[in-house]
Length: 164
Image 1 (cartoon, rainbow, N blue to C red):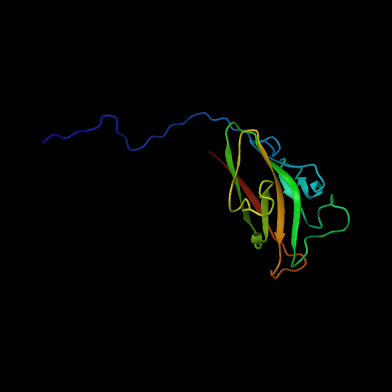
Image 2 (image 1 turned 60 degrees about the horizontal axis):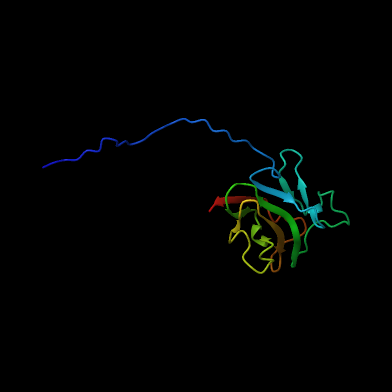
């Protein structure tokens, strides 16, 4: 009876290597997030600290004039062309998002190619080739929801980009 024993077998390896990764603000990162500069750009701000994109539809947003303090109850509110997601990397990526908050299901984000009629980014990723972008619009659907003045809809949105 003969037994074969592999000469290069191992159970585990730990190897330390140098890695250089820098953090960049949202406008300079591989996945760029930035306001469009268009008619609805007052709802999109930079936090002033790390270049993080913020969407603010609350009364604390001093950039919005006219006195509005939030979205209507029992209504569908759409804000077109709110911000841009751009792939500043070297290969195509699928961009999706996840949301958190007590009423996160009332808020959806749509890439320009879907214009409210297709799947939102929380259900289906959009593919961006290197150097390409998608303009993102927002839909808030409070119809049939038991929401009142001052209720928060969304806490945070996390974008993910996965290489194809």
